[in-house]
Image (cartoon, helix red, strand yellow):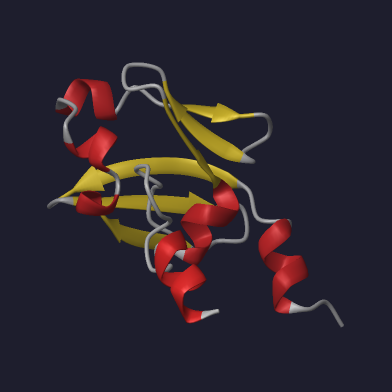
Length: 102
């Protein structure tokens, strides 16, 4: 029996669309995940035309937007992980906070 982690590693993106401030990603296993566009600031700042100008990376291991130079992995999108915008990864404590706790 395949674990959930193995299933997520094997997921491939097949289509992306945008509607109502959300990004919808369709995967090869039939899932469609809707994500808040606010989680992806580079895409949020794009025009509709730039946002819809995307291409699959490889066989769908990720999605690339050439106009904003944004790359997101299929696994990241399937798990609903926000884009990293510098500093600390969303949801993780800042390094100095972790050091203070040690």
